[in-house]
Length: 419
Picture 1 (spheres, rainbow, N blue to C red):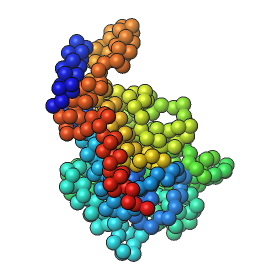
Picture 2: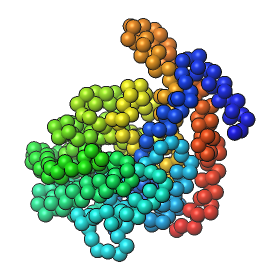
Picture 3: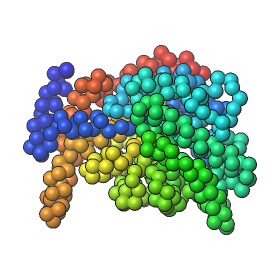
Picture 4: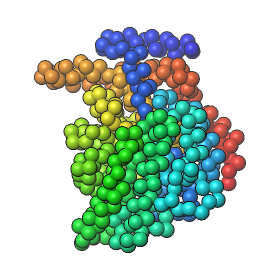
């Protein structure tokens, strides 16, 4: 181990010990919490099943060179990113990344066969895998409608797609021996004022009821419903709003998915975590960074990210909350996007585990708000960085300041060859 890293760690251990924190225990705890890395950052959400443009309120900006164009390139880029990211990591996959090998079949016909190459890839890495039906970028979209479409043929197509994805996700869990969270996000809505909102939501409910009627494998492949405030082209009415998604999850004993970019800019998801968990057994968090609107920027180590991780760790909710990242930036190096976002998520988890949370909570329980505030503020300057460097080194992961040159070299050697 580098002398300066060891020296910094010994100093940090002393400082944290004075605050009543066992650093070794905190590092092990932070390392063990799974974080799911989304595959779609690597190719701008394009996927492999034939979409030539994004629809359904999704837009990716930028044209940085070197995006993955096929399965082999995306796998290589994912492996490169994983070599720079510490901690227990899962891969989050969208159904649009099916490997069809020239076979002519559509999303309502997908089986595990189209995703077995992904399972084999992830198994070799010792990882788990989460899954998402892809309700966008497809000719069977009725404008921006899928499960709420008044066109019965199109609605049925998307119902079948949801059922197939549940079967596939359950197979992921069986083969990888790790839970596979299946997240349902539908972009359905209207650009301008909608009058008959009841009809859209009745069709959505009927569709979801059909998809979730069979409760088989929910224990190993829990299903989540994700809400959204609005999307491009659906600014005025969103069928699966927060109230709808949360109500549906509660009523049907599903996992509630909260995306940090899917709310009004002044709302904080951190304030919703324990409130929602009073009424559902589990929660999926999609961690993103909205800028003005749901723009899915690379996750930053900001106050809201830290509050979210504090809520999870300090309230011992690690077994009830699934964490996944969700952003797509094509304006900078895509592998760097993954690396920055995932490392920041893990840093926030580590910071939450290292905080003197027991003393903070005890002060609150005793009504000593002065001590609570003092400890919360002093926590911010505890030597997290020294522990992070030690943690990375023990895991064989480059420390801060060391990983970026490796990506630059990979860009020169590999990404620059892609048109």
